[in-house]
Structure formats: structure tokens, C-alpha cells
Length: 162
Image 1 (cartoon, rainbow, N blue to C red):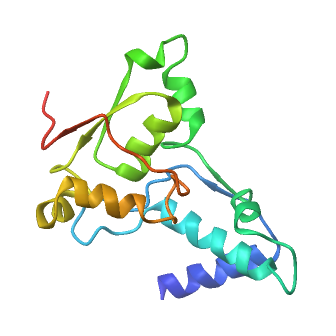
Image 2: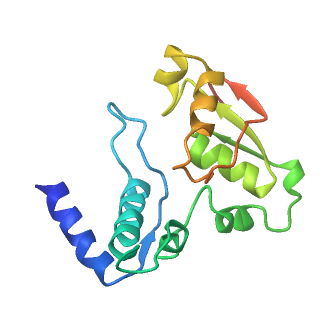
Image 3: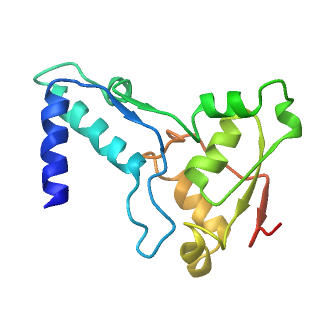
């Protein structure tokens, strides 16, 4: 029922081309079953805007539809600008478990990255295949925040502990 009502609401908003603010672009939580997060809802809304106003009824493109969803947080530049204010990006490193938000954001911001593979959303896939296999799969998926750009972490570790 929840998903039906949400999709119905998003269709009404998409028809009106209402903007959406996503204050946490993560798409999945590292819990059992990787449940969806606000970033996945933003992606769905973006597709609704695009498909509601594309040819033959309009001139909406996939790229134009992105303008209707404002995402704040990793991997988008604003969060890195704030974090790196008055700092040299070459002396910083982004540590995280997600290729899509952490490693992609670091690459876009000119910051090094340390990908933690056994403590987050990719752990099961890395165990089944390999870190290299997961990276290859990610880079072969055009529907990520990397938007077709190939990403590669500077460093990889199984676990991160203070």
C-alpha cells in the first residue's frame, strides 16, 4: 500500500513538474535486503518526470529530468565544497563503503578514496565475486550517480576500525 500511494503521489507531482529535494542521496541502507533510501525515491521521481514529458508529448530528456531533483550530500559537489573549505583536496581522503556515493563523490571532488568492502552495502557481492568484479559491474551500469563515468578507488580495505 505504501509504495502504491507513493508512486501515485510522484506521478501527480511529475505531471506538474514539481521539484523534489533529496537531502540524503543514498539509494540503499546496508541492512538485510538493502532497503531503499531517499536517493532511490529521487531516481524514481526523475524517471516519472522524464517519461511523463518525453516525446511524443514533450521534449523532456533524461538529462533535463535531473534538473527537477536536487540532491544534497555525497556524491554531489556542495558537500565536498563545505567539507574541504580552505583545505587542499589532494591532502584529503574519503573513506566509505559505497562506490556510488563515497568513491564517486571523491573522484568528482579530486579527493582520494578508501573503499571499505566488508562493512557496508557491497560486502555480500564482494564476497561472492571480488572487489574488482563489483567495480566492473558498477562501472558497467549507466544508471548511477557516476552517470557513465568510470570510477576506481585509490585504496581498498576489508574493514575500517579506529
